[in-house]
Length: 225
Image (cartoon, rainbow, N blue to C red; front, side):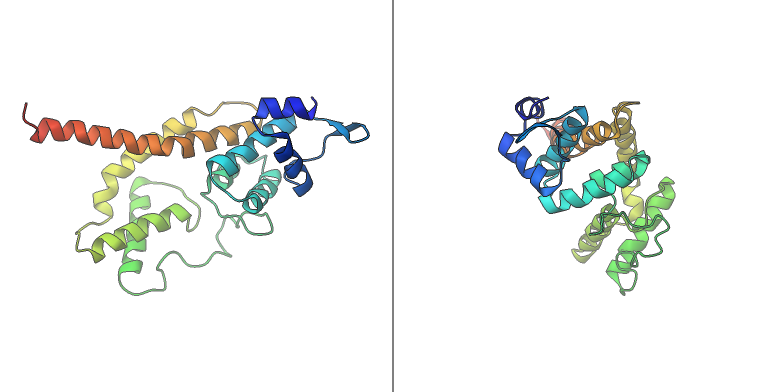
């Protein structure tokens, strides 16, 4: 396809496509004449993934380039690829994901700190063990949970990992549903793009659904009529 059709089918403007080509995010097309080239479905799938990472996940062009470099190396490992595009795994500036055994990873959140941060990190470890979840060493999401527990305790709220188990069970069901909606077969880039859309775009809607459900149950318990 010509660049005009690539733009139409991807929803990305021609100047932006040319910028991605110059910056190396998108590989060059097949030259057909002076200053002209043809592009194929691989370009379209990669461009859609770029659009998802920048426009949906909100990554910078530089960060997107690092993620794509890692994705190019890991297309045979769907689990690792999803971790990279969804941000569950950090990407080094070299474009490589961290080692799976965690040998080069720093200690977990709060591991070397006394008091609340260490306690919160231990709570997260206990929660994931209770759920039987297999995660990478020190995933960013675990740090968010630990920091939340630490903040709640600092505010005098008696909350530990056991209080989160019912929510973790709901999250487990939601995660299964997310992965059930990925295509069983197809191009890894297409699966990665859909995973970004399902995860990032749906998150505000899921929070809004929780608010609607809270309003409903509040009305049932405390409302008049």
